[in-house]
Length: 83
Image (cartoon, rainbow, N blue to C red):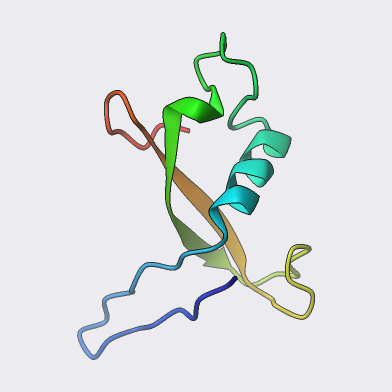
């Protein structure tokens, strides 16, 4: 699922949400999160929050879509975005 990016009259960008399971899988493949409960960046300690568009490029997850995103996760323990 890919939501549209919305810019309001005030120029504020609405959050973009993608499939949370896919976001976790992408973060694990990229090494941002881990499947190992002993690791500090264990995926089970994080919550998917949203995705930030970074720019235009071919996107493997969505053929024909030319937007690159960064999936954002918050630590459930200290509520910071740190991965």
